[in-house]
Image 1 (tube, rainbow, N blue to C red):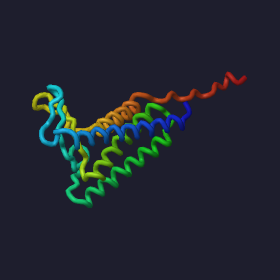
Image 2 (spheres, helix red, strand yellow; image 1 turned 90 degrees about the vertical axis):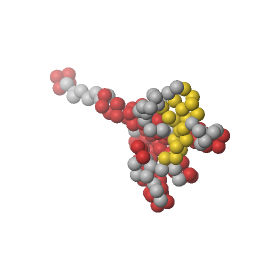
Image 3 (cartoon, rainbow, N blue to C red; image 1 turned 135 degrees about the vertical axis):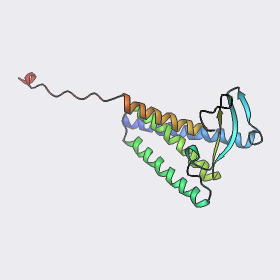
Length: 170
């Protein structure tokens, strides 16, 4: 597959992820009772409405309009960096991982721009134990994308090109 087609596929995946993320959030925000009470789906998973004014793990809470737009700008710069990285990347697995990060970041940026907060809803729990804070599809995509990038950078290495054998030239 042509490298530009691979990159275009990455941007298409990011756009699709953004649209799915926003459709889920829109549906839950307007068409469910999630804001009144959590919806138990499985014994270990429920939908819970959370307005997240910070970034990962509630850090950098945007408690003012200025801080909100500073976070939008900061995360937009990171997303722009990921988009440039996609334009430079040649390997499809890395492009797809970056697309997950870009699409997830775009979904959370849109939330913060439109509502002033990121809407989280996925609540994975085992009794009182929660391995994660309440999250959303965009957060999950970012996490999976970063894990893939880290795993690929740590576990897969390009094979060095062998040096030409001078004896073979004679």
